[in-house]
Structure formats: C-alpha cells, structure tokens
Image (tube, rainbow, N blue to C red; front, side, top):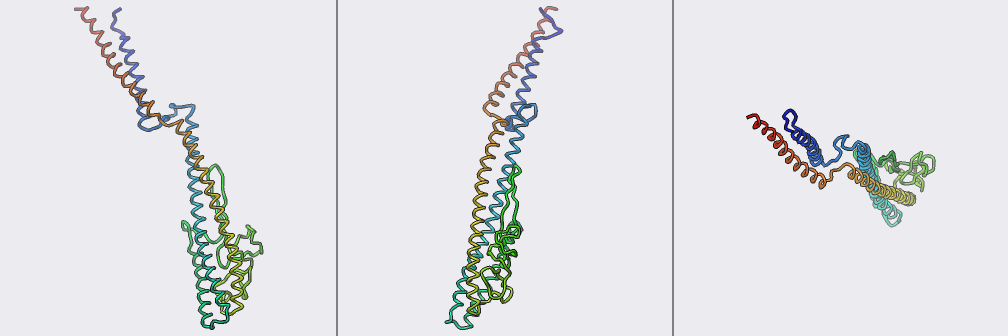
Length: 301
C-alpha cells in the first residue's frame, strides 16, 4: 500500500538514530572520563557501593599519611635522644677523668667547664627540637587517627634534663615518664634518682666526690634513656606495620571500586564503533525512506 501521511520506514530509522545517539553519547562519556558511573542512572544499584568504596579508600590513604607523619615525629624524638645519649657518654668520660688525683685543680676546673657546656647543649637540643613547629621533647603524648574511627596514642617521654617524676614512680603515665628515669629534683651531692640541673652548682664535678656522684647519676640516666629509645623504636615498628596493613586495605578498596565504576575501554570502544556504524546505516536508510515517498509524484503525473 502506497501512502504519504505516515512514513513508517523513515520513522523507524529516525527512532533508531535517536536511540543509537544515546548509546554513542554514553560510550563517549565513559571513554572521556574513564568512569562507567558518571550519573546515578548509569548504575542505580551500584552507585552507592561505588561511592562508599571510594570514600573508604580515600580515608584509609589519609590514615596512612597520618601514620607516616607519626613515624617521622617519633624519629625526630629518637634522633634528638641519640644526640643527648652521646652527650651523656662524653660527660661520663669527663667525670671519670675528673675523679683522678693526678690532675691539677685547674685541669679539673677545665673538665668541669666542658661538663657544664655539654649539659647546656642538652638543654638546647630539647628546646630546639621541633616537628612542624611543635616541641617534641617535653613529654606530650599525641593521638593519631588512622581511619575507621581508630586512634593510636604516641607515648613520648620528657627529655628535659631537669625533669623528674614527683611521685617516685617512673612508670606512672599519669605523671609522665621521664627519659632519664629521675624521680626527684636535682640537689647537691647527686644521686642515682635525681634529675640534672646545669643552671647552678648542683652538677659541678670539680671535686672528687662530685665526680663520683655524677658518674653514678649518668649511669642511671643512660640505662633509662636506652629504655626510652627502645620504646620509641617499638612504637615506630608498630606504626610501620599498621601503615603497611592500611596500604593493603586501601588497595583492596580502590581495586573493588575500580571494578565497579571504571570504564572498560575495550568494551566501550567496541560499543562506540558499533554505534557509529549503526548511526551511518540508519542515516542512509532514513534518506532512502524519504526518497521512496517521492515515487508517489510519478503516479500523479
């Protein structure tokens, strides 16, 4: 039947072209962005899962950054602690030299000056050691969040030469742990549990008895500092293990999100090529369908 009011072939070709244009546009959008889920309608059932996995991956990566910063923080404390430990070793050597009776008083006084200057350097190290502008040697513990609501507490000892634990319990975290193990304030005569004080005459080694007391005090401090540095190393190793674990977890989150939401370029390229061919064919058929109606004019001539 020959009619002209409704061109069925042309309408079907036009409908096919419209639908095919949507396929091409969708394929080109995915290829351009690298994402399969550019709009909610692209995956109504999975868009929430995809977004959740992305957020989990991002927050876990941020947690890894926090842990790495904490490791750097602790290493800063440990490096300064190692410097203080070296100072104390030299101070012990000086105290031993000052203990002998074969030196003149002037020579002992010279050793005493060096001893005091090394103590002053200890105080300068504590005052000037900072991380991101924050003083790190005064025994302020730090809370580190690493995602999923988890928090780890960094235990930082007080490295000040004058610091002491007033309650006599060096393991009492409520008072604060002292790197040197001192439990009492510095006083004349020295002692194994006394803090240091280089601001006055408490730390002089210009007499044999003072030198002997200083040796005992330094020995006690070196033992405690070794323990403090060991605790720093243990915390660093623990944080490194946690960071490695979180990196693996972030990889899994991101891998799962990628499987759900990223473009499969091979599949989308094939889909785009098919859509382009269909579009060209539909355009040709639309032209043929429109031309076909022109034959009706020949019947009217």
